[in-house]
Length: 201
Image (cartoon, rainbow, N blue to C red):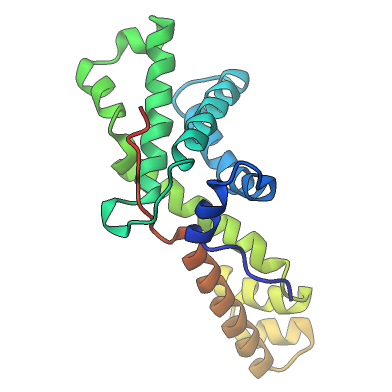
């Protein structure tokens, strides 16, 4: 079984080292799809959304160079969300037209502090859940994962799943317990709250 993914603290500390390319590959792999999807929901086409996403990661890179672990200062999720929405706002204003010209001033201002937006928080947690599911799936045999998925995700009766897979009912319960334990641990590692140390401006 491969080792679990790096915790949020250790990954962010590694990102402070510009020479650690593997850390950046992992970071972009985890958060790139989330940032891109969030930008696209704000009305940008794919190419424009990719440009905004690249600027988001450029700002993240600059902020992480001065990273210090101080849990009381804020949450990583909120910090990242604020950077995303400020880059969206900058793009709206740079265009000086389209949605930026029709949005009420209060909505434009709200974008600047959108790191704590419930929509962003939900998207962040949902995305990390999907990432955790993908990572955990690779750590189990197909039949073990199938037992978990059919019982816990699809909600099918354990006895029915056991008969279909040709295993005992106890084996199905054990599979479910093992996968749930691994999933919970991976989600904790991926979603551990860490400090914000820059306002993203």
